[in-house]
Amino acid sequence: MKNWLEDREKWLRQFNKREYAAAFQAYREDCRSSVESLDQAFRESGTEEGLKAAAEELIQQVERQCKETPGSYKRARRECAYGIVCYLIPALRSLALPCCPVLEQQILKAWSHTYPDSPIRGGSFEQIQAGFPQGSLLSRLFRRREGGKG
Image: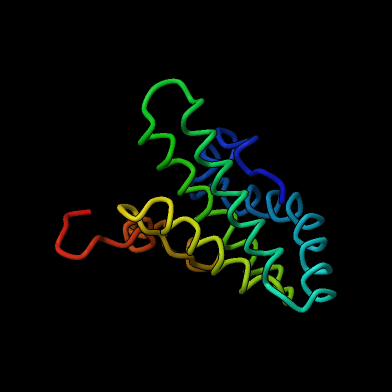
């Protein structure tokens, strides 16, 4: 799977009400071929193992990127989470290939296993786009820990 982190700063810079729709469409098209390849392998194998491996590799890429990013590890991890929540998961949902729901769940599972203190969940492009005026969408996508403040 393509590593969205290669262009992390670009995608995050474009995460605003004015630019998000066009940025999302570009991101989605950029991901299409790698997701289609995963989907073909998924359909041919009939198992989730390839999707699980792709999800685990993605989260390993996140961890490497966070460790290699100068400055705050936590900030880099938060930016990676934003990318997954605001771009990757919505792209998977909009591509709507047979592998996409399974891949989404594997990504969320791999994230939760690696970062149990900061669980995430997915949303659709439409939910995110509609959430800009209220400004509280990201807090809904990043679940609060039980009994914690965030």
